[in-house]
Length: 104
Image 1: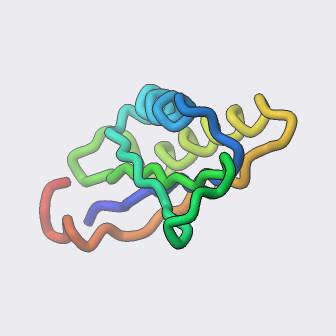
Image 2: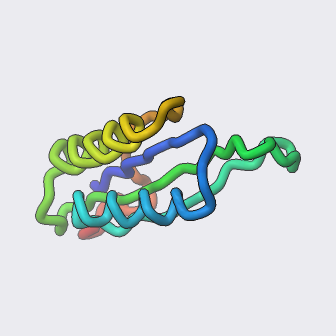
């Protein structure tokens, strides 16, 4: 069974920040990451944005889930450390039911 890794980032983000973070996560983990923005009732939030970056670790992936999570946490902590007002972040895992019984 595959595992989905989600990185949630909420805070003052620049226009290029989500793409930069996607690139850094991909470089650190060797996984393909996708971006999903979270809408708050369709209202603009004055620069406060929440995004969720998602990757799936399957059986065919060389990197273990724990190594991928550790790498993602390392990227997130580096991003938090670069800011005077750190972003609210979370790194979570859950089984990915869409890939149950498949090879990743």
